[in-house]
Length: 146
Picture 1 (cartoon, rainbow, N blue to C red):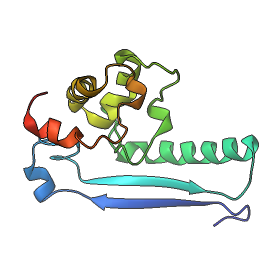
Picture 2: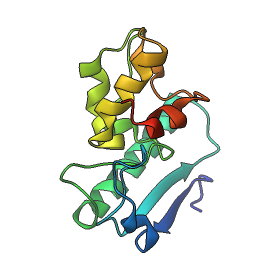
Picture 3: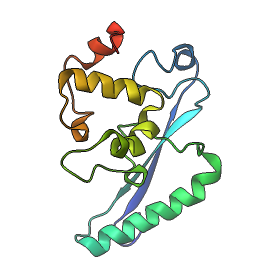
Picture 4: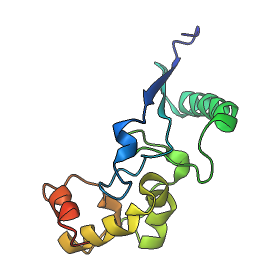
């Protein structure tokens, strides 16, 4: 922890073994064969305000740049539960497929198109809420209807 009360955390989640035996299209989670581990970066600080936010985000981005030679970059991807705001965000209240694709393909790979099809079976209105919890999501996915 530095004197300002901030700290950077890295969590490494190893993949392989059984993870590699499951096709990347079997579930919405595409990070399977060829993925060695997932790295979760977290920055925690106690200061308030935009100035503190910007300072700590800059620190995080510098660390990300330092790690770039060692991580996936073709394309850069992420696990949905480890949100990466630099991959893209929904800005409007009615997000289009093209807008959501900016980040959706990076989180879900080739599964993104199928997730959009599944979402539109339930609600055709707004991809901004594409990944909100839906109780029937996984059963629709597994049914092969999309």
